[in-house]
Image (cartoon, rainbow, N blue to C red; front, top):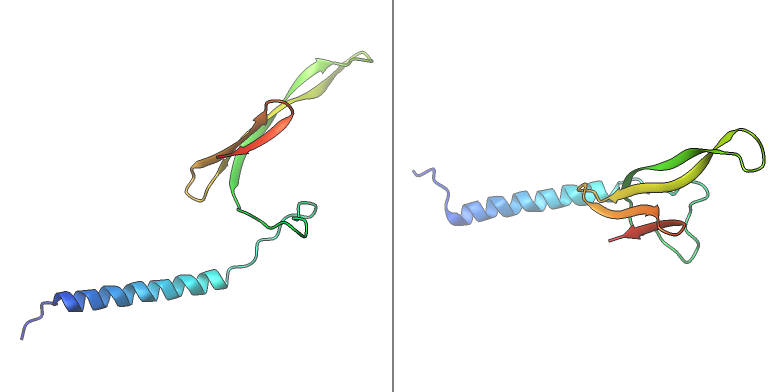
Length: 105
């Protein structure tokens, strides 16, 4: 008796494995907790969440002399940041051109 698998057997095993993985993925997806926006950032009634992205960046400040008094104060200069998709690729940037600007690719 031969213990070699035929091509049909291989196809059946691979198909069963793929179907099992699909079922597991659907169960995990169906049981994933909903993502809620932080208070004050909830979308309006006619809006919906488009995506979730990781971000990294900074806000620059400089120390400047006070205009109306002696002494110094911190003054906002500009934001600088990047948004990343789930694979870590840059999908957008946040910076100052005129005011504060977010741009997604």
